[in-house]
Amino acid sequence: MSDNLLLNIQNGRADVTLNRPEIHNAFDEALIADLTSLLTRLGKDDAVRAVVLSGSGKSFSAGGDLNWMKRFANYSFEQNVEDAKALALVMQTLDELPKPTIARVQGAAYGGGVGLVACCDIAVALPSASFCLSEVKLGIIPAVISPYVVAAMGQRAARRYFLTAERFDGVEAHRLGLVHELADNEAQLDKKVDELVAALAANGPRAIESSKDLIRAVAQRPITQDVRLDTARRIAERRASAEGKEGVAAFLEKRKPTWL
Image: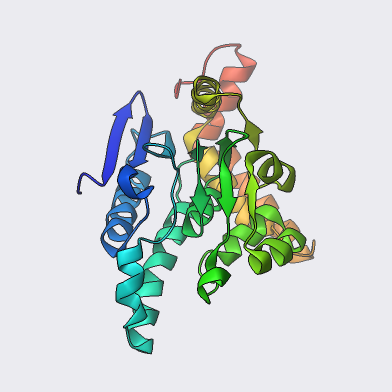
């Protein structure tokens, strides 16, 4: 892993920082590969209870690196497909990470940077943070990130911001649902992130993983008999699990569960 990506793990919290402040934490194929590899490793690490994704300097992430854009402008169609698949993989890896994820957004999040925010389970931002789905200004589209961004901010908002490439601030991002909470300043932003990490750490790690999988299984689906049976099976599995038994026992015995 290069210096373009920083990792700090303490007390079950993994801070992953995009570290290219001189170019607003824009990413290229190398950073995409490194981030995919790191997230995959963190997802398998039982010592990690939560992942916080942030950007160093003034910006969260400006999306694609200009030099990367120059390279893919000369790619063949097949090369562009393979290149885009790598970006799709990092978004999928972040979205489906077994560990809960928090985006800490202190500044600009453009293009793929918005995708990273949308792929995190929770997003906290400053009101002054700036968001933009800028792809159409370049004659391209936010295709790879679109499933996650539409899920986060809704189809109606996407029909505006995908097409206009307007910038919008943290207040608007919060109103749209892309961001869950706003903080007045960076100190408050860190405090809110700390509070969220503490809240996540209080819960069963396997239950969190199963809850994330549950959301994917039921979202945008009609409530059919198959869905009802699937949810019954899922809760039965959790009740019968060691973690489920420990959690219920701890509650009834008025003590802390062992995962604390």
